[in-house]
Image 1 (cartoon, rainbow, N blue to C red):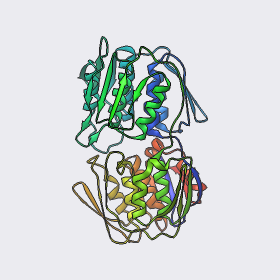
Image 2: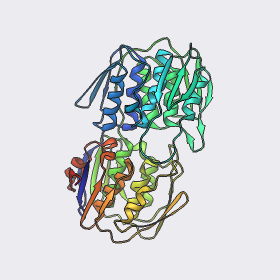
Image 3: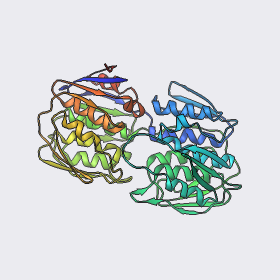
Image 4: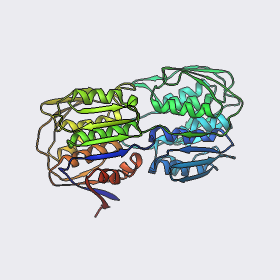
Amino acid sequence: MDTFIIQGGVPLNGEVAISGAKNAVLPILAATLLTSEPCVIRRVPDLSDVHFMGKILQSLGADFTFEDGTVKVHAKRVKTRGDYDLIRKMRGSICILGPLLGRKGKATVSMPGGCVIGTRPIDLHLKGLRSLSAEVKVREGYVQVAAKRLQGNEVFLGGRVGPTVLGTANTMMAAVLAEGVTVIESAACEPEVVDLAHFLISMGAKIQGAGSPRIVVTGVEKLHGAEHEVIPDRIEAATYAIAAAATNGEVTLTNMRCDHLAAVLDKLKEAGVRFEARGSSLKILSGGEIQAVDVSTQPYTGFPTDVQAQLMALMLKASGLSIITERIFESRFMHANELARLGADIAIEGPSAIVRGGADLSGAEVMASDLRASAALVIAGLMCKGRTQVNRIYHLDRGYEVMDKKLRSLGARVKRSKEK
């Protein structure tokens, strides 16, 4: 397995372009199963999760090519049973369930895997599909869904911690080919859901209200092929913005959407980070003294759970106490113990992490536990004195396109090597 070797203490400076959004492209790729015509998706990040999804599509019978940020998919004929060995490795693969059900009237998909950050049940996915008159069975690790004819209906997808993003996507993708009108109440409002809706509309779907808690889908007989460009990755943008602030650097992020980062930018401003936000670019300015802030993760438009770990790394630089509360996933503080190996003072109290900033950080060997925890460890390594080794960075490759190369372009002393 690969590892990152980081020599810290260097401010990041320069310009970095933000890649297409991982959390948008996976359901969009799944949506290509809804048509027998070719689809072209542009601005696709070169990530291991994208390649996994490509293998899943190929295992279902689709033609899949990926070159220079462009994916071409032609699902002229598709199977209805997903490959267990592929799907179990990536949670995002569950989003093939809705498209297969919508197009073929049935699907058998293994329970998905992914990062170990807490229980993430798919009950709301299944509730959405049941509302469309699908029969749902869970047997021997597989989800089986079938319907003679999907029927539009009203469904409430609010859960214990708020709406479900992939559950909304699955229900929406099945509903576009259902008979009649489907109303999804308490729908996820994330930009990635909106991007999926835009792609489906370009294929001929009739969808209103995406980006609000109420999405209305009027079913159509069939969908056609389409071309689409994926939105910028707001989590990647937040990660580089925090890395720049953590190293007292001056970095301009380009090809991004500042309007998708309102909660993050508000919290960075409260923390004393100086920046200039202008449409598709964000410039982090040096010289701001980092202040301790409290934050609680929430569904969009609140502070994203996918930026919680990175903000915790930044708070190591602040003077005073910060309280970071995780409301979405119950096991998403696994990075705290690894940050402690670098000298961090963090106490976990139930759903909250109490961070005492200002400690001297020194490099050490640390272990990445999930995608965003990996990013937090890299940011902390950039702040440390001396050498930090971040192991198991295959997690990073799932969600950050060539992170080591982008960081080096900003002056960071980072290299990728094999674990010994």
